[in-house]
Length: 152
Image 1 (cartoon, rainbow, N blue to C red):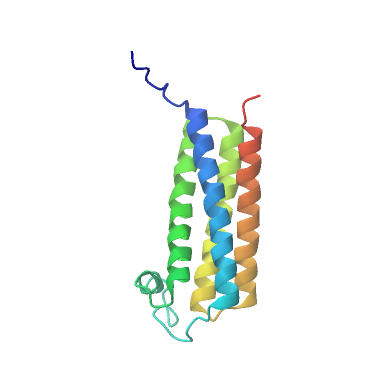
Image 2: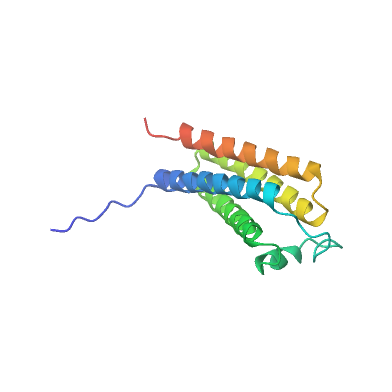
C-alpha cells in the first residue's frame, strides 16, 4: 500500500519559504561581492538619464555581463518571494511571521532601491552602503523569524 505524504502545514510552508529567501540572500551577497570586485559598469546605459525602468531589461539582455544578470534575477526572486512570504504570514496571523517578513521585505526593497541607484547613478558609495544595510537587516530578520518559529 502506497503511503501519501501529509500535506505541509501552513507554518512549515512559510518556514520553507523563509529558508528559501535566506538562501537567495546568501547567493545575492556572493554575486554582489563578485560584481564589486570584478565588474565595471559602463558610464552610460539606458536608465542613467532618467527613469530606472530601462536599465532592468538592459541588464537582463546581458549587456553588462552574466554576474549582473544573475544579481538582478535573484533580486527579482527576492522581491517576489518576499511578497509571497509576507502574504502567507498575514494569512497565518502569527505575529512572529508577520513582523519578521515585514521587516525582511522592507529591507529587501531598500537594498533593491540602493542597487538601482548604484546601477543608474554611477556606483556611489552611499548606494552600495544602502544595499549592504538592506541585505544584512533582511538576512537577520528572516534568520530570526526562522529561528523563532521553529517547533520546539
